[in-house]
Amino acid sequence: MMKTLYLPRDQQRGETKTFNWFQDEVIELKIALHDNNSNAIEEELADVIAWLASLANLRKIDLETAVLKKYNYVCPKCDLSPCRCPAQ
Image (tube, rainbow, N blue to C red; front, side, top):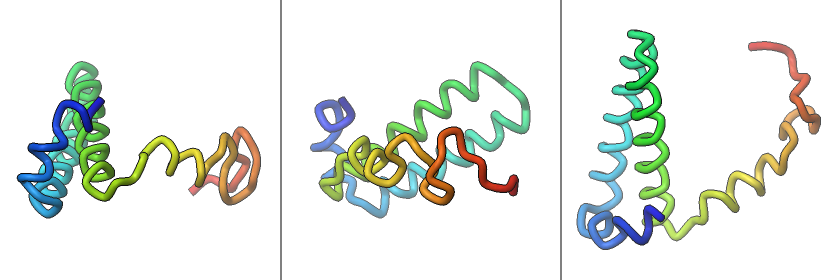
């Protein structure tokens, strides 16, 4: 969806500026979490994922495939689901 909506704009903006937008959204998420603002948290989570997808699209990486490759429904460290690694 993000590729269809924004790839030409993302390509024009470039990777560095797109990454900067991603960072800004992560900071906004941090603020929303600190303020415990449920509506803002929901919106910022969506923005973080959208900008992350834009970065993946610029690198021609299918984000869903990359996540499944690494995690494949189990923790990559303990190989269990749910994860049973010691809490950090």
